[in-house]
Image (cartoon, rainbow, N blue to C red; front, side, top):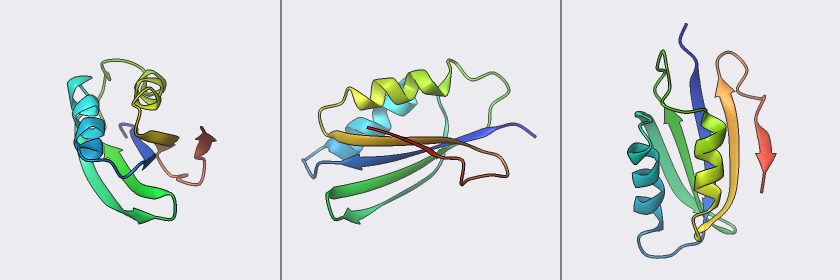
Length: 92
């Protein structure tokens, strides 16, 4: 089974924040499989599941680091979504 990765982001509710985050993911060569978004107590949440690829263009940790550099991103949770989605590691 090809590994799939999931990112959970918390965003400041700024105009264009959602589009900037998704655009960064796609520009870095990670195909998006599923996206969910909605309000959260501290702004907006964005759950992005990446499609499994045999050879990702770069390690998902690099993508997480780049997402954290966006001004509107307040936190990033990453995890390899195989059979253990509870293995998410919180990083702020």
